Structures are given as C-alpha cells and as structure tokens.
Amino acid sequence: MRKALGSSLVVLAVLIVVPVLSDQIGKFAGDLPAILRFMSDIKAGKRDVRAPLYSHLVYDVLKDEQQTIDQPDVLIVEGLNVLQTGRPPRDGRGIPNVSDFFDFSIYIDADEADNERWYLERFLAFRETVFADERSYFHRYSKLDAEQAEETARGTWATINLPNLRENILPTRSRATLVLRKAEDHRVESVLLRKL
Image (tube, rainbow, N blue to C red; front, side, top):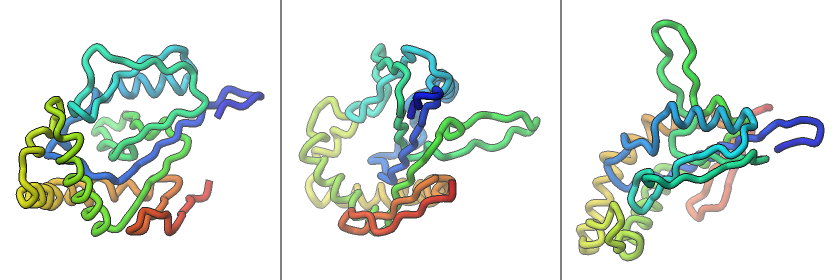
C-alpha cells in the first residue's frame, strides 16, 4: 500500500490450490523474462506498465491484447506456482524469482481429498457450461457423457493434477506468509501467519 510518507507498493501473492483441467501444466502464460520485467517495473513505481492478458477460455495469452497497470497501491498476483523458485545457477549468480517481488503471500490449502472432489465437481459442471463454448480449449470435454466425463476427470486428477500438487505446489506452502486452510465446505478452518 502506498503510504503518505513514502512510496512503497504492496505486492500480494495469492496461491490458490486449484488444479488444472488438462495436461497443459508445462504451458506457461508468458515468458519468464517478460514477467520479471513487468514485476520489476511495477515494483519500481513505473507508470503505465503493460501486461499481456491470459484467457482461461482459450487457455493461452491473448495475442495483441494487453492491460495497462498504472502505479497500483496493491497488486495481486494469482497463480498455482507463483511461490516456486528456480534451481540455483551453477555459476553462483542470482536469478530472480517472481516471488522475490512479493511483500506478502497467501497460500490457500485444503486436504487432497477435498481438492479432488472439488476438481471433479468443477469439471463436471464446466462440461455443461464453459466447455460447451466452441472457442473453449476444453470444448472436446463437453461431448463426453457423464460416465466418460467422470472417468476423464479422475484420470486427469490421478496422472496430472495430484502429482503437480504434491511435487510442485505443496512444497511452496512453507514460503507463504499466510496459509489459510479450507474445510470441505470451503470455510477457513485455520489460519497460519508466519512471523513478520
């Protein structure tokens, strides 16, 4: 938050553990150098910083579409892997991580079984809503009958989402400033705040 006596910016990261819907985990919404430049420019207080727009409908960055961010008091960066760090370079030179620009981060956590159930419910609901849009990257799933859709969703969970959760997302939980633990009914059942 910008204070009257200074020009500090709060960059808030929100890590919501919501599994992806396909095998596109490796697909990156943009290139890392561009994201780091964006974060650096925002943190430095530059005016009119442009950012690409990502579409969950087409599951990609929208070509030729950008949003301008002009010196926000608070910038919320949301994503599954925003707290991840890269491997240290062999030459010992530092490589910045997106999370290096965060002042405060929130990890929203839940039991694996709840995550799986929510994923299955969402997949089945999307089959009849957003997947039905012919422009949707996931349109092919709208053609599945209920049994096929559940089988596909369970398979995606077991082979892609659960390994991603365990190998890439859960290990970042300890890096968060605040961990909110959700119960099966989505209410927050515990709050863990790391000493600031």
